[in-house]
Image (cartoon, rainbow, N blue to C red; front, side):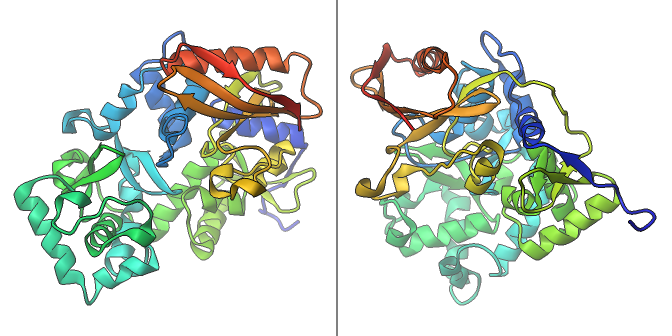
Length: 397
């Protein structure tokens, strides 16, 4: 080894798994009723909650906090994300996917907004509004400035159908403006449709006044935040968290290694080099119990989930019914430091029941898994305001 090169840390797969769980906030005692402070600390730890429109159980951005904290008032997230300007603690933007993020991350994502504004980032089909169709997009900004917050359906040719392939020109223009940071989400309406407004009317002035770092510094800060949230990670894991480009991430990782923020590591059984955040906890045990949303940061990168837990997992909502292996909306069950079951859940709001469509236990699930899972399902039903749980089938994986 060359003099000055950082020593490589070697660790076992179980050690890496416990580091990852601790970094994500698992294994800590749950509060009887988590408050705004608990929620803020969780959001700061994981850095974002992914948004998804599927509401078969509960909207995805509510679930990661429940998995870590237990029962909490979901209106705390609503107020933090879409409440009065003075209450705002979160903003919407494209991070991993569409996400709710702590406000302090706003300056670190302005480079992405600037690239989108130049037509260099964002979905390819939207980039025309940065160039030859820019005037019509900017006319929408003027309309919002004059008339106040508006959803796509509030414009004369607005269309409410879901899926970008069904968007009309107005919706595509608005989404380019959102990517470019020229408008943001004021609130959500009806079937969770975005209502757009000017950033200065939504995001606190103190946040907008923060200096904008150059791209290289922003990438380095985002990779550092990813490493804190992940604990131990490959380079691919680190760049995936905020969806950075390979070259941008590579430069940032190298700089953070040089600075001693990331420590090179090798994990037994992992094919690629890893990086340990210098402040990561290395617990001897992790005693967790949680149902995990398909979009939870712990498991959203499916290859990492297999590396950490030996757990092959795919979400069924994007899979044709005849090709689903586990069900439609399947949540893995975390017990201790392992994923030991998967549960296909549905919220029967009319009948006030949490429906367990199917439960599949892993071959090595502990003997008390069913009992512990039952407790967690009952807790989830109570948190959702349902009267109880109805289970259909149980099986082995």
